[in-house]
Image 1 (cartoon, rainbow, N blue to C red):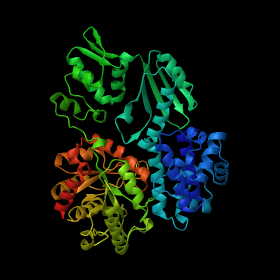
Image 2 (cartoon, rainbow, N blue to C red; image 1 turned 60 degrees about the horizontal axis):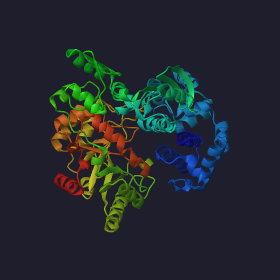
Image 3 (cartoon, rainbow, N blue to C red; image 1 turned 45 degrees about the vertical axis):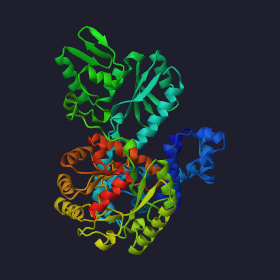
Length: 571
């Protein structure tokens, strides 16, 4: 049992508990444990042998016992018992955009539907609208959700792809004979979702690497196998391609299998103008074959500056590289703090002290606590009284903390009538204000855009949170005129969030680039509800890089002193 396999079992247990209507804290504990297992670099099997499971945050005695049972037996009795109680199709229903555990429960209780096919048939026969609590709109939304899910079902969010890639990379490194192992393709380019994984390996014995690859325990099906290439379907359901080459060919192979097809075609055209040919096997300069020692050398041969993987989409990067005008992209090391984090004062897991310690471990100078405002009751949003109590507690903590500073912030709702959830006098008291839309997604484009613009024009709003409200694979963006919102943000100096949660990655890269050209400032934030979510910053930075953003474009690359100055000027 690998870390990822146990994490997926724990995630399914959380889903099953939600469908059964169990205590939400119990489901949350399993989901939190799954996230910990996905992110940790410690091998669970080794921790079990050394009796060190409790070193993992959030893993108590009960969860440790279940992990141990999985590692030692390959099975978990509790998991099997839950699966017997819940038909497998019900869990699939949870993957439909907009369908949660409550809707799944209602559908099962009233119509005893146990599969997506049965649910779709019932919706098309207009049977769902007859169920109390659902209605015509829910029925239509479920049909749209099923269609959307089918469109996206072969795409994987980055954090899941990352966990699978880590498992496979570690396996290949342990087999011996692999001198270099890298993930290429859309994953390396930081695309918001990934269809499959592409690996490139350097080895003096490529066929031996291929042999070990197809023999891995996680290989469910061998789709194709040759001396240097193989394609398999993994037990996780993801397809993985491997190219193994001799070491001199590695750089050319990595470059070729990283770039988008459009980028590679454009490069071949540039090479053709010189009478050259380029491929995964090297650069053919007339009759001479050249093997670049690095990707920087590869682009230098074509008289270009190095093009980072995230930009290899044929969106003007080749022309910019020829002119030496590529941006110096923002990097994770540039980030000085996170400006959108939730605590257990609303719907977060951790208390203020735990969040401060985790931020310090990230190397941050500051962390903004931005819990939800009162209208979002489902998240235990803060009333005015509790908001000021929290602010006082943050002020007290700042007297004790060293090398990290907490900002007293709020994520205030932009209400359907364009008003903010708190009045300006209260917002003026806060260190930082994020304004976000959490409801009323079905308003028309003009109404919703005016609603967001009103928030952007409020002098107390510092950041527009998750600007389009999308949830990848589950909910599309609401009908916002993003270009118009960016223009207003440029005028008002309001920062636009690049939400780093791999479920959101909101703002989309094309809009980041558009905003950058207008002079808009951005904030790359995790929207963390758990200390482990702070690691999601890497995905936000990837998205920012895909949008050509530089450190100077991102306010949380500012030092604490510079950030305070920026916030003060806004007030």
